[in-house]
Image 1: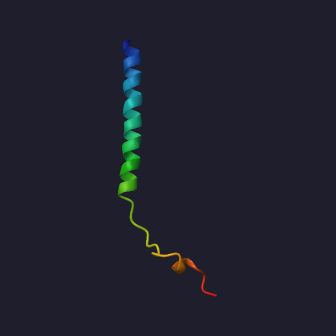
Image 2: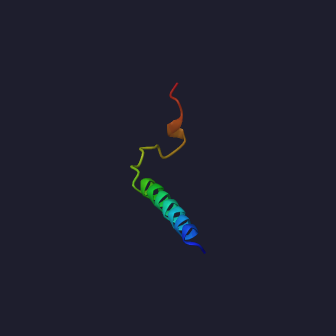
Image 3: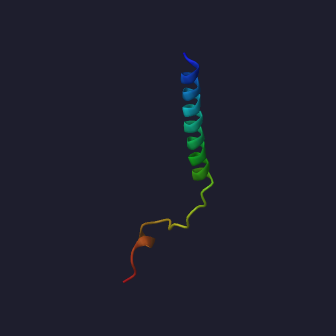
Length: 46
């Protein structure tokens, strides 16, 4: 494998792993939303 191909492959791997790690971190540290526990609480009061 040539040096250029090895550098390109390494750069792509680092980029993909970094972006994947960033989004996993964002999902795992996202604050929880206050959501009702049942569907009956979602009904509109008429």
